[in-house]
Image 1 (tube, rainbow, N blue to C red):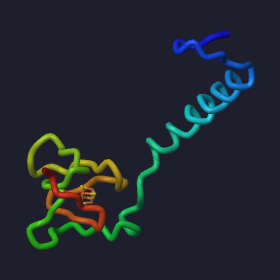
Image 2 (cartoon, helix red, strand yellow):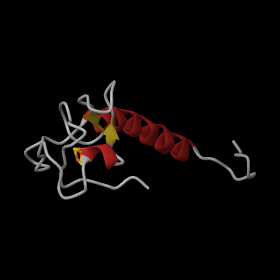
Image 3 (tube, protein in one colour):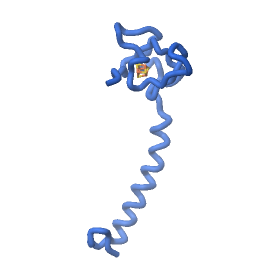
Image 4 (cartoon, protein in one colour):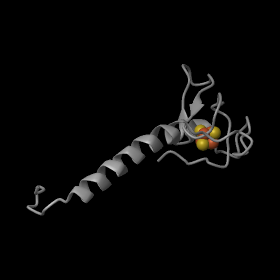
Length: 91
Ligand code: SF4
């Protein structure tokens, strides 16, 4: 069997590819669900200087600017005025 580049693909290559695909499919959901605890990330419900969650790349806002939101990396409700060690300023 040939691939798009005209190179021969062995049965072993196909099996390796299938195994990699299966492994990737198993790892992805686990990664998507894993968030760190507030304690581990040293989350606080007040800003650190002028750095706060509402200005962080990881923050997902609530329904209003002052409502609790969520974070892509820290579990639980997150205050827009909070902060943690994973803070990354929005560009
Ligand atoms: S990473 Fe930290 S600072 Fe950024 S939104 Fe999440 S909890 Fe707030």
